[in-house]
Image 1: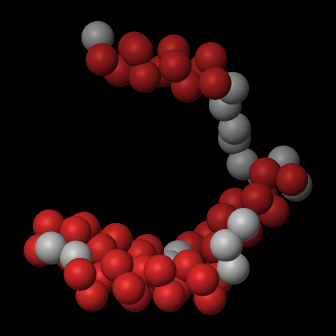
Image 2: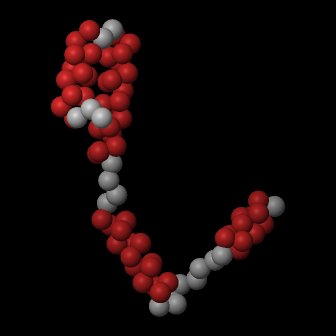
Length: 78
């Protein structure tokens, strides 16, 4: 198995001789990775989920089975 250092060196060597198509592929990978790293769920969303969970645990909120959800969705389409 190659070490991280070996992989980095091989990629650097390859990029030095790569054609435009390969460079664009690498750029796409990098762009996708950067977009993924910048995506985060705001804390306010977790707060809402925690509040709803607490209400569910205390029996203060209505919940539905998957079958009930499907039935309601199908009846809404009619």
